Amino acid sequence: MSASLQAVERLSADPDSFLRNIDALLPAIRDRAGEVERNFMVSREVIGWLTEAGMFRAVQPRQWGGLELDAGTFFEAALRVASACGSTGWVASVVGIHPWHIAMFHPQAQSDVWSANPDTLASTSYAPTGQVRRVPGGFRLSGRWGFSSGVDHCGWVILGAVVPDDDGLGPEFRSFLVPRGDFAVDPESWRVTGLAGTGSKDVTVADAFVPEYRTHSSTQVYEHADPGRVDNNGPLYRLPWSCVFPYAIATPAIGAATGALASFIENNRERVSVAAGRTTSGGADLHLRLAESLTQVEAAHTRLTLTWQDFQARVTRGEEIPYVLRARCRYDAAHAIAHCAGAVFRVLEVNGGRTMKADEAFQRMFRDLLAMRNHISGTLDVNASTYALAKLGVAPPKFNRAQRVVV
Image 1 (cartoon, rainbow, N blue to C red):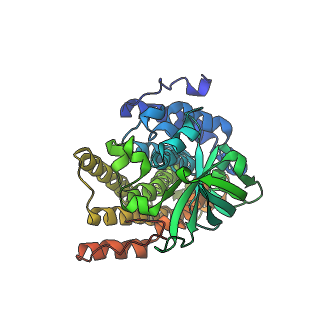
Image 2 (image 1 turned 60 degrees about the vertical axis):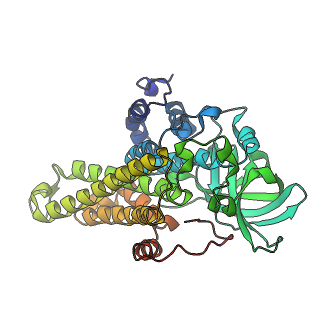
Image 3 (image 1 turned 120 degrees about the vertical axis):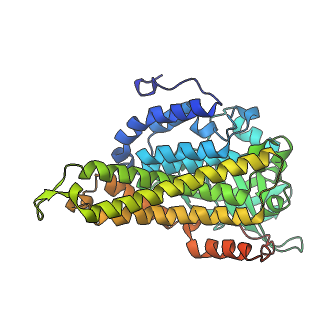
């Protein structure tokens, strides 16, 4: 075990032990945040630490060497990592949640991924930008997909595509599980100013055969007929798809905002305003902004905890999550992303000229939050409408096989 991991305990399915393992990594992750951004990817060393701490096995099925922890514990871990480095937290969250999706695939697909190595990772690019056609036994897949976070570290990628109408029921969205040998990574496709360290590069597929069993359809999600649920039938895998993935985006935002505000507080304890001739910590304008921002971020964190405690209790009792709660959860995630970014912008206005230093932790977290704010999960108006309509008693929208998100 490396010196940086001496405080890490043996991999454990106990939530408290797991979170202690994550906490033990935070100082080293924080120290390497600038390097992660400059290199446009999380280093293999840091990925190794997270792997050893159990981050990428947290929601993986026990039958494949996973910890099968509750989703709330996983999200809390991702939040803490993001508080040290936004990009590392993003990769920990979005790559870390993918074993949950793979657990929904056919058992043979799960075996393909994990039988040789339970630590095998998978990235994703769900936007259906490639082409697919049905052939005997499966599909032929080709094209380019963007924003595949952490792909440099992954042996598999899950790609989204819409299968043309070949059964008379309309087009259908499917996820396609593709091994490393069948896709290429474009090394020059990720040069950005926010979430730079996520390495969210483009992947290309020339013409790969994907067997039927290595696909997962929106119809299966809607009908609760995911092939993997036959074996993976614990409470974790009965959580609603439409809620799990938005919170995999919201938690890094809450974490990055938490880290940014901690950096702001540290920067302003003794900072002296040249114009005012006094320490900035005595200014009422700073006090109001900081209090408001802290309250907003802490509220988002509290809502995360309460929501996933409630959801875990419901699925453990064998209950389905009501539609109105699913709609609220999606809005809560979008609200957290938007308002955590806003909370950091609020204090940026009183942080002084040092805000512009590119290597400052506060500036880096702010750039990361701007990028997170532009993720589709942060779209407030659409999610607000869905939630408000649900509260008004309007029935859920009619299922469309071609849509990616099944509410």
